[in-house]
Amino acid sequence: MTDNKKPHALGHLRVLDLSRVLAGPWSGQILGDLGAEVLKIEHPNGGDDTRKWGPPFLPETPDGQKDAAYFSSGNRNKRSLAIDISTPEGAAIVRDLAKHCDIVIENFKVGGLAKYGLDYAGIQEVRPDVIYCSITGFGQTGPYATRAGYDYLIQGMSGLMSVTGLPDGVPGGGPMRAGVAVCDLYTGMYATVSILAALAHRDATGEGQYIDCALLDCQIAALANQTANYLASGEAPGRMGNSHPNVVPYRVYPVKDGHVIIAVGNDGQFQRMCVALDMPEEATDPRFATASTRIINRDPLDAVIESRLANYSRDEIIAHLEKATVPCGPINTLADTFADPQVQARELVVTLPRAGTEVRTVGYPAKLSKTPADYRYAPPVLGADTREVLARVCGYDETKLDSLESAGTVGAKKA
Image 1 (cartoon, rainbow, N blue to C red):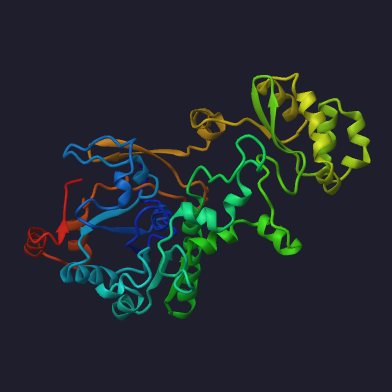
Image 2 (cartoon, helix red, strand yellow; image 1 turned 30 degrees about the horizontal axis):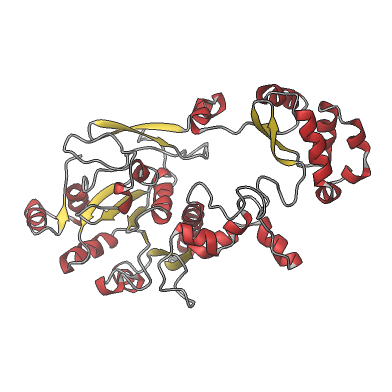
């Protein structure tokens, strides 16, 4: 755990996080890493869905709580408040909290929070300048607005799976999902950027605002060059396996003991690769002289590269190409990744104490010179902070807290 006295870029902000699973929690965690106080509201019976998404599980706490490792990926630097918002008393507590919060993040179905008075209109009544971010599968408008949206569905509907995987007609060909929930993660990051933009606007004008953030929209935007290629040409790109639609050579190649990635991004790198791989004819061949001609003639070029690489082991060719300043690298397992000296030098793994145990998480990746990320709290035990936060933020006394807990409106566990 790092020094809590260091300056925090967002230390003046408080976030009410009503979201579950990944996209919303990812945004909340980013804000928390940068210093905001994030209050995670969970149902007293079970909490965030991902607490059960195991194995593997985090070390069991002394009171027997057993949370999935998945939960830890998006819930660092948060305080857990177990509140049943489906009751009038629980909803009123959340509105009391909202009075003292700058930002609200939620990912309920469209209109789902209105009946509790916790939608934008309801929160705006108690906090007029609130920044309120709704994350849904398809947004607040359009014919699909009321549908539930999950990352896997969005990977298919956005077109991502149409460009991911091996081509039809080859062994293993067909659509393939990405190995992590990229739609959720992109949406969480777009939500965070939008929240920070809204805060800048509020600083200038005093106005809060509503943010409508959809997984489908965010993933389509994140297709980047693939959507740009389609919009320019009218031709839908297909699956190319490990090949790149716009750059050659830029793919996985077999070597004696496995595979290596070669990523040649410009003509100078191509010339250096030709020298390193003893390919003098290809270096002067007009078919391969420029990026655009290499794309047209990728198959004969790849055949020559594969023949040269067959003589090398993975580590040999990486060392050889790195000496020639040709971009290349291995395909690591996560065990390889975390053993890599570069990864270790960047101090990406953060170990935090958690209810008498420890949990390791991957830290915030960007290094800020004046206001670096700070790791104040491990992913919380369900309800661990309910009483402390309600007393400190809302001024509830012990008698009121005891009554709410006895009624089951709130839950509390010792951290």
